[in-house]
Image (tube, rainbow over all chains, first blue to last red; front, side, top):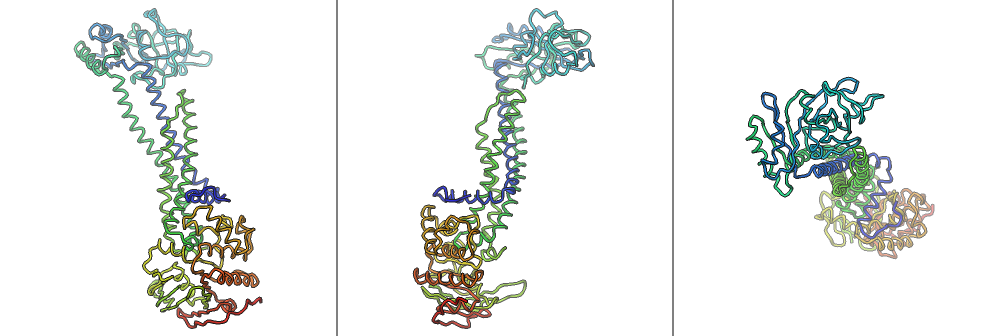
Length: 399
Length: 233
């Protein structure tokens, strides 16, 4: 309430009057706020979750290294993949290539004494694990001594999926992969975003490359990681590797991707996502704004006499308009501030749920405030205009 | 001070044209204290609204302090109301959420005065109407007579040329009404503000120096009289 105006400026006067008018109808004000709070909160949550997802992605690329290429080799008509030796000899054939890891991705029935499930089984040399930037949760990774050992490293979600009561899928336990029994030696940390979209390591069983064809019954390497000298250009490397592999294995369709390309593709996807999220936030704000307009129209109806009186003592139409517009903006800005706080809480909870590092995207704060103020101006405009067009005589006669 | 020249007001109700004022011509000088008297439906309220720049005549001219208000825009009439006129209503029209001094200071807000000056002048005005001790109360905490004093203080704070009072004692008991009339007379004498009072109360009209009778949209009587003393019942 305003007992003794706090400031000299007319704006403060307008704002404090708006606040006291809004406080006079607490319940209605709160209900009108709700829509704006939800709208702003969803926009803020979406923006900051998107922001954190991007940071995670960047972090993931950092783990993999930007001097890495991903090769996807389509199968031939005969169903034969790439010859792994074509990949392993790349350092000799293409200058600048320092490390390679052919990967054979296939599906195979996997069981832990329980029912069988079809799970992605990836055969890869030990170097492939570091090239994928995999983190170890428990146990150990595959090593060069495992070439002929039936051992497996399993993804975090596979570990949960395959665990049965009394028989958790932990290092030391055995699994049946195809017709073979493998010993689990390690469980991977959850990976949020994979550089290699073809292989979701959370849902994969990793085994030595040498055993993969026999185990899955599907021959051939269909992907590879290639690391190159970081001083060289990724696009140039990508072109040279493509040329060499196409020449060596013309029957396969070779597709080489660099992190740069993937980031560009992801940005494109992100843009689509952002548009979708913006649409959802926009709809919430629209609904909230209509609520605000409704409340403001009610307020104008109820305060006709006050409007008439103010006009009689010298308020110009623009003064009346300004008064109601201020009230609408104060209302939506309050909703916006609460919405921003709520949106940040939501994104914090989401971050801790997905084991992301919480990061505040500072640009979301002005965006949230701007959006809610904009909603106030847009949806407060019509009620304010209506108030300013009232006939003072009729307004003074209203009850 | 206030000149009405051939004022007519015609309302269109459906296809019917209702003539409320028919060529009213009237001159009111500075410092006058006059009553416009008529039964309900006589057109006196419409006349007051036109004098108060709240309504526009269908034809005729309104001049206040020599200014022709016919062509004034909504912003101009608002400014003129703020600068030249003060309104007092039958039902006080105080804003319940504001304190007494804030109500009194309200016209100055539309003059873009800062809050310190507004408050200072409002407290001065409250002193003039004898309500200094009620400055921080809400209107709901005051009696009817006190509320009308607040309204009078609000009407005077902008140092207007004319106070337009529409049945200012209509909601008050006779004792309080007499006190309010006394206040109007005192203010008229002290501040030289012109007072125009709309009433159907013959007792009130008798206390005014000039009495203008209106019937069916025409002035039917205009006489200057020796004002009767306050009739305390």
